Length: 358
Image (cartoon, rainbow, N blue to C red; front, side, top):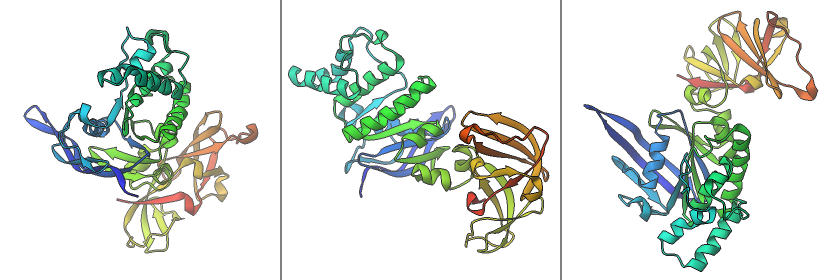
């Protein structure tokens, strides 16, 4: 399957005093048609800069952006087949919902009858067809966001760019809108490129994710690939909670590693390691188990117990130094009855361990 949007070796440098800031550093990736693709990373990683380059609000210092086989070059935003939904919905306060949605169509000179039909179609798509005459200030935050979406979709862009559009919503409404955005993307067949720093949001909504840091694209993959098989320590640390253990390879291809405190641990084998090579072992808290210290691979003292409703996280100070988290799901309301100060053990199945090379 060929790429619908291609980013080829894009670098963006901004002047900064007497020096410069490299917001993007030779970034390359491909996005498929009709895909829900997310750019994920911490503040300042370059994700919004990349979105603005696709939109045409900025121009790359080097590299090309290609959409549906066409090199966009220095085309201004209004000539590109894309629309953008920003964090602030930027609705016109003096215009009704229907007038806001139809504003872009009016500017394009679309016939009034066709424009009205398209406005009604978009409002039905975002489930606001009963709100046509209301003003933005008469709407909730979630409803305003739907109007902004309808306005952006009314021009039938080939690509919809979304710059953290859910960040101003409360948690429950944000979760509702995550599902709604997925539904709208499926109903329209438009390619969505979504920017967020929220890992849960990215995992919930995306077909694929590009994890970014310091202007570089670190890893591209499905949510499962990104979470279960991170490319390096940054990705493992940024996506969800992760325990890290420093270790040394005991024998090439055998999956045996020696922890810093002298405990040998079995993990997935890698043929690219040499005996004595230093590595980091990454373990998700939900993949480990807590129990009696006499039966466990590692032992320690329980420092804290945090109840989250659906699960409980146990914070353990390891006997050999360092900290470790174990997360247990609270099935049928049953909780593990460990108390702070208890001596506990940690069990880790070999297939739960990811070996990260320094």
